[in-house]
Length: 369
Ligand SMILES: Nc1ncnc2c1ncn2[C@@H]1O[C@H](COP(=O)(O)OP(=O)(O)OP(=O)(O)O)[C@@H](O)[C@H]1O
Ligand SMILES: [Mg+2]
Image 1: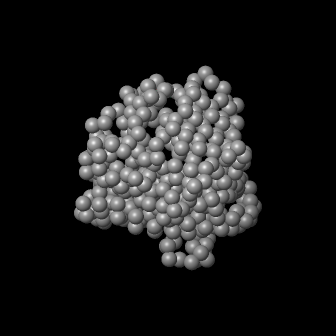
Image 2: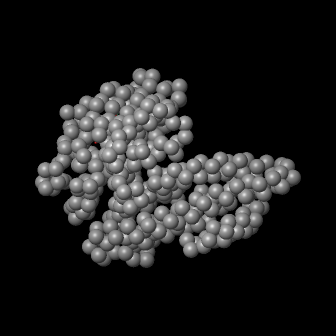
Image 3: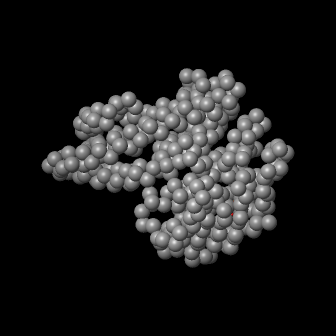
């Protein structure tokens, strides 16, 4: 997969930009606060319709402008697609594929797949369970439209069920209606879980293999899925549904008391282990960083295994954070196969052999040279 061109209108500090990246390594270089991260953010936004800095769409609008537009041509398996997102300051967002308006997000996701690695992504290892679910859900949604649809459906049901739980405190007879929402939650939730199990199984194998190389064979990385009810990857779907139902029954009184659904994929988590110890609690900074890096490399390979194409890779401010061994391993792993965008304030961290193949862009106050 490759981004052939990118056009920005009023996006952050880019009032009008045309960017023609190369097929391999693209180095976005410049002083602080010139727009390097903004450029990567625009590519991430074009791919996912979201900012990766957890910002609102409104924040992406160039100060003083009424609308912004991000447009790009993507080629994949010899097919070209034009992606476009326009945002008006009224809050209206229009998403188009080759000129045709898309009203359902899952139809759009995956046309441009991205893997992002930035210092903030360490939150996947060190942050709250929500960060890990976000990582997992975004990753799977880019690979599977049906998963993206399931998630939307699940969260709708969850919101309805939570509303009903809150009402049960005052109106006890509403408890009878819970059964209907339980069934919907269990149906969608079990499908989500099955897909997560399948992807985690593949991702775990790939991440273990990258991590072995990064850590010179001395560390064994494992990924485990922590389910909020009794469920294992080898269980049949009916067993998973039963177990989910039993858990909801057990939690009934507590759920009504708190007005919240306390079990299901929205409460699950992942744990990373190196040589048997939990990386979040016991890993060194370097081990936590290597775990995040292994995961990102595994994501690239997973996309390739599932779709036959590598996604594009966005590396924001990460080279200076890695030691020379890890930096070299990362760049060598993507060289000649993954279109990569790297932001940097200097070239000291990049090997000459890799620089030779790179296309270099200098960013200066929202302009590219
Ligand atoms: N909505 C916006 N409209 C206009 N300008 C903006 C907007 N949001 C941010 N900026 C400007 O963009 C600049 C930051 O750009 P960016 O984060 O891309 O810098 P950077 O080149 O990545 O810098 P660093 O090397 O420090 O990471 C800010 O200093 C700010 O002035
Ligand atoms: Mg930056």
